[in-house]
Image (tube, rainbow, N blue to C red; front, side, top):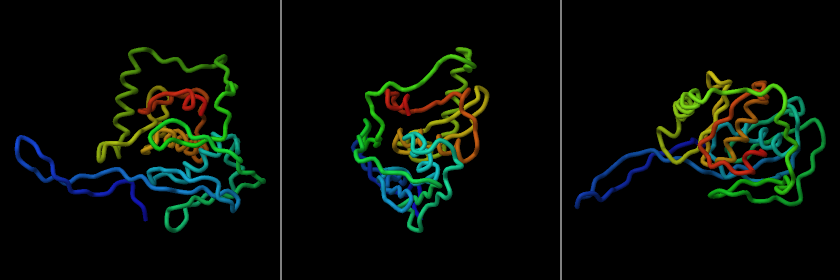
Amino acid sequence: MNTPQKSIHYEQYEFQKWKSFDAETIVETPVSLTVNGEVWVTFMCTPVNLEALAVGFLYNEGIIEKIDEVVEARVCEHDDNVDVWLNHEAKSPTRWRRTSGCTGGVTAVDLLAKPNVSLNGNNLKVEPEAIGHLVEMLFESQLLYRKTGGVHTSALSDGEKILLSAEDIGRHNTLDKIAGLCLINNVWTETRILMTTGRITERLIIR
């Protein structure tokens, strides 16, 4: 079974002497997504919340719109594949685009297309002084980061508390995990605040 972190031992040279340290480091591993029996893509990810990663990726790519379309989503025995079965046919995109980042994410969505987003209606308003408190809650939700460092966190809030959080070495993956957790746990997202430690790009906003 894959774990999100592993123990390491290292030597550090400081003030003209060597010191030994034991620490934890974040894990990045390849995990494939199989949809209706066909392998679509391989994520480079931290192996936690893999079902949510797969479901959220399909949602953010526009393959599914609701959790009712997912018959089953399960991580295979060796944790190197997530098998997703839908109640309808789904065709794998013929071309994947690599997005920005260290290893980068992948998407089949047209990066030049304008997103269909409306800012009208019932929008959540946040007082400026509340932003600092929300950031503190985001940092408190970083369980893996406090153990290992080197990992991104995204969190969904209603303005008062953290509803869901997800950690991954890939910032794109954290948003897919959040989307998947929302679908799996039936969390309504229209008037929520999404916070992330990742650099904000157009691709992340559209996602």
